[in-house]
Length: 316
Image 1 (cartoon, rainbow, N blue to C red):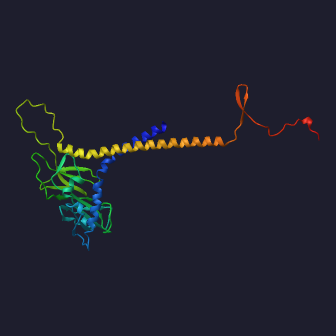
Image 2: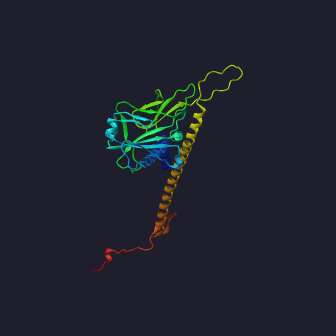
Image 3: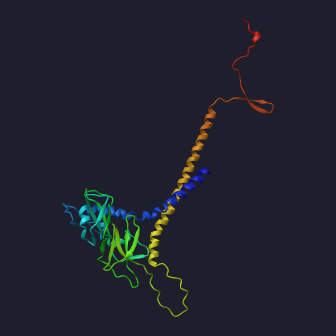
């Protein structure tokens, strides 16, 4: 019972530690996409020239996503910046960490794949998700490169979104920034559909999802105002996200329980085999004859090993 209790406690502890990882798991597909797009963006470099953007071609199963790559010297990036790289305006003073001699800025436009890789429950995208990530340019055939950190030490980077849908009446457009871990941060949109940032990541413009207003009915006493409920779109999107998570949690818990019972069964089997070995060893040993002493059975030897000799019977 002590072993079973320990296994159950271990299973519960593993489950508790596992639950926070689902937030990270939701970004795994986005990180895999970044690695894939970095590979295909680097393939666009054929006799590349510094400071010239090169458009890449994505796989056919990702049609709709646009990518580009531009190689720069880190010193030039800091001292001059880039006036306009697609929708990104990069000012002077951008620092690359850790320092490399040359850096590649990979541009992403996820188009209609934005919600697939960067879901934001409760909000609706009115512009595509744009990405700007920095990589080491020392090996242009490398894959699965880690991102470098770029930070604006002076003026921020500006993102001028071109294809922006009109926000619904009563909605306020917000800039959203996703860091490399997939955590979103909202900020205000400046005039002209421009968002600002001091570091790399993925960016877009969103509005809060609103539930449709109910159709007017015949005048009746209105019920008490209980405040706006969650939007229907948000519920549907949340349910789509939550069901796989719930299924994974239940499946993981079931697997841990089965593993606990398997370990317990193996422990009992080991003990049973040990007892059987002891029984076989007892059967192989020499058995003693039993005799009755009164009403009690007691072991008795058949013969003595040495005949006793009295001292006075010894004749020298």
